[in-house]
Image (cartoon, rainbow, N blue to C red; front, side, top):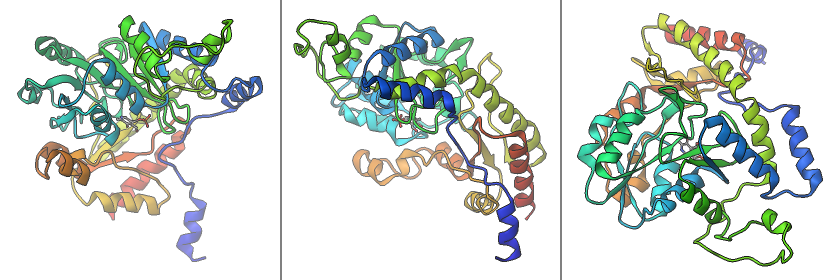
Length: 388
Ligand SMILES: Cc1ncc(COP(=O)(O)O)c(C=O)c1O
């Protein structure tokens, strides 16, 4: 081992993200396994009730992923073949993928380079007779301007389905995201602010939609196995709507309940680390820290995305990796991918703001398992890397 390898071995590895799991989740999942009722049942219902209560929304429908939540939301909103849905190119592919599932076209609108969210001022010029919905994404956990979006949707008779994969808990003007759009889709994927391994949730205040969604997520069957349990003809059911295999299991829901209980605590830790980054990174002229809204909004701090004002982003990420600090890049704009170019005719240059931002962004480690000392190491190492 040479000297450098030795020194690196002494340095802690700081992961980009880690789920915050302890004995509570292990115990809750074990109880479900011991109960032998491991698919959709009482825990899922409890999780749905607790999630809805947390957000103050009327209905929460647990599903197998946020992608499934987006898909079902589009189906229940009646969006289908040849319709258009306005969204952002600066997101994970799942957002636009769900639009494709229903045969509609994702119509991208460039972003505001400060907030990284869809540029509201450019939406109206993208609306056509085929436009049926707007699907904004609250990137990193920063809320989109929901009032402005609602106003546009109202004026053009469009459905507002927000991709809230990053937005728990995000507040917009004192209300939680998940209680504002017509339908909101959350993710409980492994790296999200709360996780069930894989999982998702749809929230809505529309009771008719909620009922249809509950049926559609499990093959369109009118009652799930848990509900049939208590009945005499346990085997009898009807198929009352089109169906999908998108149900959540009690194993996942048991974990979700524990994660929900810890949500505020983990958010406090994320916010504390984000605040340290915000303050300390000011000393580096080459670094632009994330936009912080003044509108009584609460950022979920799912991601901490900086923009490099000079130097090569890829080299920067690699240099940090060599120092045992794991970073990531969010996002490669969707119109730069081969599939989106071939299928929808998008090209390089179509969304210049998203492209410029993509060349600059770096997501720094941010998760509740970090310590203040880890955050200091990241900041100091950034200083060293920028100097060199
Ligand atoms: C913005 C966004 N939307 C949707 C998804 C899809 O979430 P899931 O993996 O739960 O389907 C993700 C996942 O990372 C995401 O980041």
